[in-house]
Amino acid sequence: MKSLKYILLLIFINHLAMGQELLTKEEAVSRALEFNYDIKVAKNNVEVAHNLASPKNNNYLPTISAQAGTTYSDSKVKRDDEDGFAINNSGSVVRMNSSLNLNYTIFDGMGRKYIFERAKHDALLTELQARQITEGALVQLFVAYHEVARLTENEIIQRQGLDISKGRLLRAQYGFDYGQGTQLDVLNAEVDVNTDSINYLTIVQQLGNSKRDLNLLLGRNVDIAFEVDTTVTYAENIDINALREEVHQNNVNILQINEQIISSEYDIGISKSGWVPKIGATASYGWTRSDFEESSNFTDITTNGPSAGVSLIWNIFDGGATSTQVQNAKITLQSQQIVKERAQQQLDRNLNNAWTTYQTSLFILEAQRKNLETSRRNFERTVEQNKFGQVTSIEFRQAQVNLLNAALIYSEAKYSAKNAELALLQLSGHLLDSEF
Image: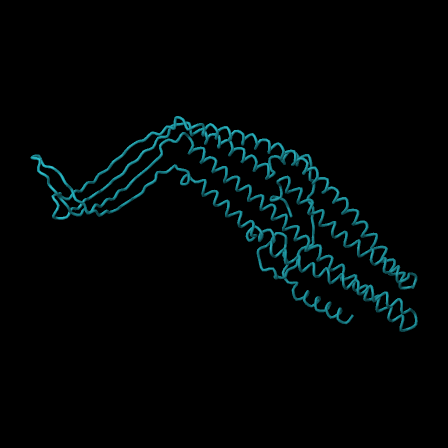
């Protein structure tokens, strides 16, 4: 018993020392949007996607290259002059060259345009994926935040219950010392104190773990101490009919599928470009020099100047490869449209389920609020009766346990209803513009 009291004293002192920072919901959201690891990675993915959707990455600009080289050779040359005499020459030759080259695709059968347009929609798809990750991270954040808030309330409730049990033990001990109670009353009170102490220690441990979990989601040191706001407000006038009308335009999953369908349509155009001729242009400026050794009969040669040309490539028959690509692209588009139909039906189902869960949670919250009020009045009446010895220790304990359980259940119902509301708003696409 003394060890347990010592542990409880350390926890209470530590609680007073740590309870400094108040982490509001707004601050938690702001920090998560900036430092959450998943959100940071999603932002980088969006930046990469926009870089890929640039004209610089889609063959719209010419390419310019420079090259230079030198070779050395040592060979013998035999030739006949006009009189039929053989002339032999030998010696080394050093050849040097350099050039500046430009290549540009003038027309590629619209493939370049379709690839560029698809890249832009892929960037939009990446933004929607980042939004989905952000929404999921915020829901996860608030579930963790509400868990800390619930355990904070439970810690207070359990501590108050422990104080009540300690007071009852003290009164039982006084009663036994003055002959107005029995040893059984003292023993029962001690058991209840030990039980409440264990429950209190368990909640304190769970609260510490939950705070570390929340710190991790915020991307900061897990041991930072803080308190949370236990005030909960609920959205007013949520209209299920309005949500049904808007959900297919706002839900992030549906929006992603729409972008995938558009990309599949561009894939068809990209595949068809294989049937069209391609026109390219080249230009270059070159310089070459050949140096012969002095014993050679040849003189040094230097050439330089520009050159340009236009080319046309038409793959008249490729064995049916382009036709196969076009057919497969059309099939992929059909599959995407089927996926969208299924996703819309699932969305309607999930919306109805989320709405039912939310309404049930609100009903349970109100019912538990009434139960808590009834249990509180019952306990207050039991306390008054206990002063006059009109209730037994067992009856007193039962009233206390009823109040404790009612308070804990109400706290859980309060945050469950809020989490159900956030899930409904996420599904309808209104999470990021809602009040938390």
